Image 1 (tube, rainbow, N blue to C red):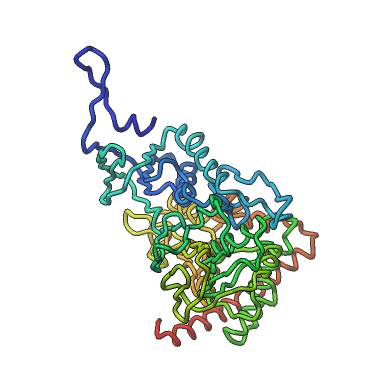
Image 2 (image 1 turned 135 degrees about the vertical axis):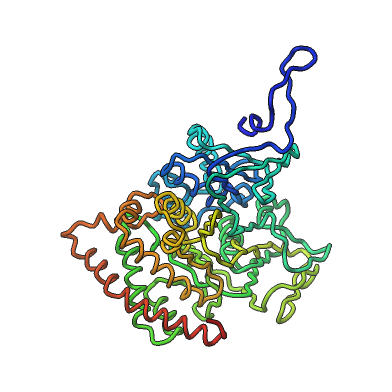
Length: 494
């Protein structure tokens, strides 16, 4: 309805009936033009809607909000608790705990269908009824404040009184639209992860290509549906460090795990004598996990995993570590460091798409452009909400960028060090800002500020954990800066 109203104007036809006449290069005016209605764009818009009285136009090429969730594989779920995902003004999880499965006892992990339905509900029942948001789905942004309807070809020009928000910068990729980096012979049995539930015949075995979160999901789904782990070959070009999901639970029940892990993390950093020693300490304190304790990970993407999932994945023994796949043939796989013979009835499952393909960074606030990026590690929607609040409440660009230092997305194992420095600097800046500190305590997407504030004065065990965290924070920052300088020297960067 919204886009139809914007696309058409009424005109009398020859029979005296109301007809329609298309307008070309329609002129629109708004305060903020938000490009992208994925999770980041929705979280940013929600906070801007709450904190200001501005008018907003949202443009997206999908037919409904949610971005990549519209094309997610059927059995995908969040890998962090639903309690701090989505938009700040509307609960996603309703405080639920998973009562069965490999996430049993931990905060609910919403399914892809749940997330997609949630974002549609936010758009239809919160955003549009406000009267201050106009939504243009099925439209391509052309740049220079212009966008075009995919369905009609209509071109719109937007005059912005305030700013443009590029909520597509992080460039999320998904298996359904991913183009593999390797070639595939016509007679090789190959499919993206999305097609796996539609399998209509049994293969000799399953070859999972990709060692990240998507590969983990594929392996767990196969075994969860009765596939013998010995029938799975798992190709990993790199092993990954993972996070224990138990340490991400934003409820008082898990305070000792969540905040205890934070304190243990800072203490491990402060005590580390080298970068290798740092990762050994992080693993020993339970901050980082790895599937195979005999293989040193070279990758870190911030994926979380439960202990039950970890135990299940360790049942897979046929792990292939011969570098990246170069070509799939019907009876063999050509990799960087060798060849892997396979049956002509082997099913190759592509899980090689990276969730985020744009690892570059730029200032978030630049003149009339806002480019949301992560300002807290692993939490893009929370970050988008913070950025919107800072935009709404601060005057100067320098102050805004100071409060919203970019936390770079990790790829290599040592990127963990590089992301921790701006993460800790942002947390320090926020703690010194009284208005922002209060706002964080009421923001549903934060999850942890209110948890810390709610500790009773007479709960000495929890108070001691917070003291450990504070005492170790400055020594940890000094050690991180030392290690970052060592990495810069090793790689010839500044």
